[in-house]
Image (cartoon, rainbow, N blue to C red):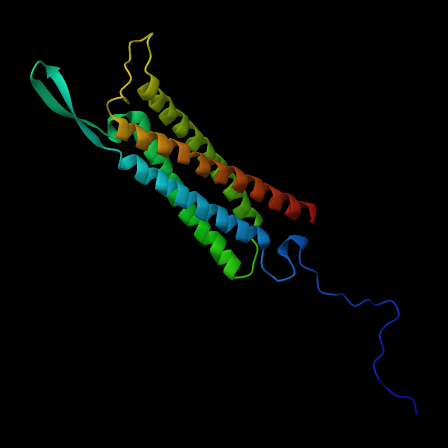
Length: 202
C-alpha cells in the first residue's frame, strides 16, 4: 500500500530568509550607528566646551583716560556681533547633536539601522550646520585676528596687549571650534556612505 505522505513538487523552491546587509555586522550591532553616536557626542562636547570658554572670557581693566584718571572697562564676547553669532551657532550645534544623537541611540537599541529618510535628513541638516559653523568660526576668527594684530590701514588698534586674558579665551574657543566642524564633515561622509550602500542593494 503506497504511503500518502506529502511530496514537494519538482519545480518548487524553498525561499531562504534574506540575509542582513553587510554593513550591519555579524553581531547585529550596526557599526555605522556606533560611529555616528560617537561623532555626535564629540560634536556636543567640543561645541559645549567652546561655548563655555567664550562666554567666560570677560575681563576688566583700568584704562587711563586722562592724567590721574582711570576708569574700569570690560571686554565681553557680547560686545561683538560676530562673537554673538559664533556662540549662537555653537548652541544650535549642541541642540542638533542632542536630538540626532538620541535618534541614533534609539535605532541602535532597537537593533535597526537608520531608515533612508532619516539618513537623508541627517545629511541635509549636518551639511547645513557645517556651513553655519564654518561661517561663524570664520567671522569670530577675523575679529580675533584684528584684536591680536590690529589694522594699520584703518587705524584699528590691537587690544590683546591690554585684554590678554580675554583674547586668550577667544583664541582658545575659536581653535576648539574646528573640532565640531571636523565631526560634522565625518558625519556627512558617514551618512552618504551608508546611503550609497542602501541604494546599491535595491
